[in-house]
Amino acid sequence: MKVTNTQAGPRGLNAKTGPVLVEPGQTVDADLSDAELKVAKGTGWFGFEGGKAKAAPVDETAKAVHHGGGKFNVVKGDETLLSGLNKADADAFNAMSDEDKTAYVEASRQ
Image 1 (cartoon, one colour):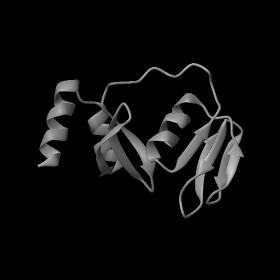
Image 2: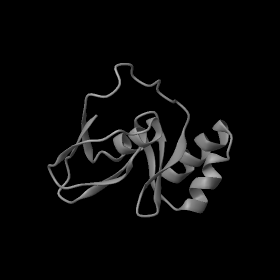
Image 3: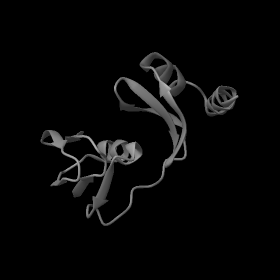
């Protein structure tokens, strides 16, 4: 899959063969796992071309995913619900029931 860094600074990917540094505007051909592809898409840092013909099913469960720099975002599908959680809060969030996750997001937005 071709991946282009759309940001002003260098960004990294975790390809199946190991870490890949992508300079601003650079396009690389990287083989990404489904999990890494989802994380990379969630950052908004990259443009994607090619890849698998079949789209992965959309996960509609809210969960905290690593965003970079030790911070986590709460996402549901392609939507970012919260950002800037630390690892402890992200782990606690992921252990919650769906109802508790919804309440946590609502309370955090106030």
